[in-house]
Every structure is written in C-alpha cells, then in structure tokens.
Image (cartoon, rainbow, N blue to C red):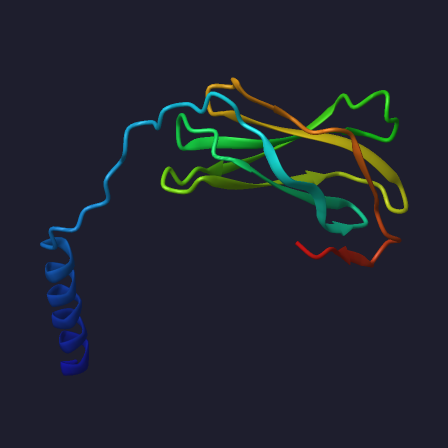
Length: 149
C-alpha cells in the first residue's frame, strides 16, 4: 500500500514539473512556397517485398504547409501508370531538402512495375515536380530486396 502511494506521489510530482514547463510546442505558419522544386536524388527503390515496395527520393524543400504527401503513379505497363499510392510526410521548414518516401501496397510477386513520383501539399496542389519513369521488380514470395539509400 505504501509503495502504491509512493508511485502516485512521484507521478504527481513529475506531472506537475512537466506541465509547468515553459517549453511548449509551437506551430509555425506555413513557409513560403518554393518557386521551383526539383528532385536532387532518386527516385529509387528502397525496399521491395512480394506485395509492397517503398520508393524514396530527395527534393529541394517545396515549402508551403508542413503537411505534405509523397505520391507514386505506377502500373505494370509503362504507358498506363494510372494506379496511385500516397504517403503522408511532414516538412521541416529549417531544412533545404526533403526526403520523400511512398509505400506502394497490393503488388504481385515477380512482377515488374513502372512508376513516376511527385509531391503535393495537404491541399492536393502539386509541388510542380515530376520524375521520369523508373521501374522495379518485386521478388518471389517470401523474399525481400533492400536497396542502399
């Protein structure tokens, strides 16, 4: 019983110290949107399993709202990249570059996929950047491909 009260006292003390701390998270206003965004590294396959892939690229920081999306347009026919995958990211306004990653689920084993990538703000507006078409092949069931970043 005494042990229980001691734990409560410690929790109350720590909680009181933490809640009275002047360091409070700040939400910054949106950064100025970049005039020109360009991909400076990639896109490239980061990981492939038999049923999903992760594609990664680095671009100049697009600015605007912190909430952004990495987007891949993909398919098994290079002339029909009508499937879309989208992954949420947060921009860091203090960094000149942004690393984007998009998770592409629902893939088939031992299949070649073609893709191009872009990024957009939470409002759905494109950052004005688009990669060329690239490709990867998913491994056999139960295996994985891990690429060097």
